[in-house]
Length: 365
Image (tube, rainbow, N blue to C red; front, top):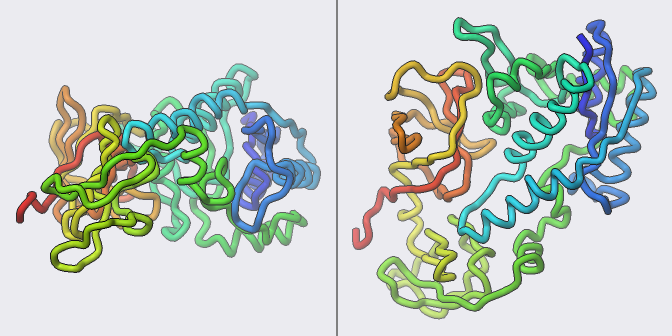
């Protein structure tokens, strides 16, 4: 096949490209420039898409003997990922920018251009596997559960899966990937993995949002509506947050309180006991299927609400209003805007953006 290898400058994408070459494919490397003013250097595991990363990707391509290009996707990234991130917070939701990047950039914009140029597939260093099932191609968890990235790939459609290539999916451990990179003479063999949000490399999401959307004083209330504090912008709070609330009125039982809800229209933050974070039901209208759609409108599955969260057994129901999921055990600290990925066994069935949640603890209970 003609393979376009997305090379981030990290060890995973470098080894993935190397394996594609070794498998006999015609491989071209590409690094995505996602910022017009990218940082020069990374700080340990913080940040990505820097000039240093682009140079690391080029060096890896040189070692592999493949052509290499840098493509400017900064405008698409700004519009589809960064602006979406800001808009979601302004709407009182907690977005996952990695999901949007995979959906809109790596497996939409990049794949579209790759196909236009005659490539058969895009190769990445994601840890996930593709299996030919009875209903067509299926997305499954990686062999190494600790590194499994199928959750962030849950946004991919059947058409996109047909043009993807994940050479690392069956690798038993990340240590093997690093050892392989060392043996191949790749300088990124021991490079730290990236963490945090790539366009907020210092990790100060609250400060970054304040700079982008400004501040506006509002009230912090408890579940009964009593005012217990104030804030300078509801966008700076996320469901489940405990620190930084600066409440003026202590709880009657003296226990800590957590953010339960963010109401952007009234610029209000609702707090309450930790027990109230338990969620008995989630639902969303925006959904997609990673391969063949479910054949039944109601079915048993597992739901995962964060990249490294434990999957929870659940019942899902599909209707004209979207997807509604009832977990067997309450989910902890779920926020609208998060992505819920549905699994049947190791297979990723699909995903939806959580719009509404139902607490397992009624007000006054």
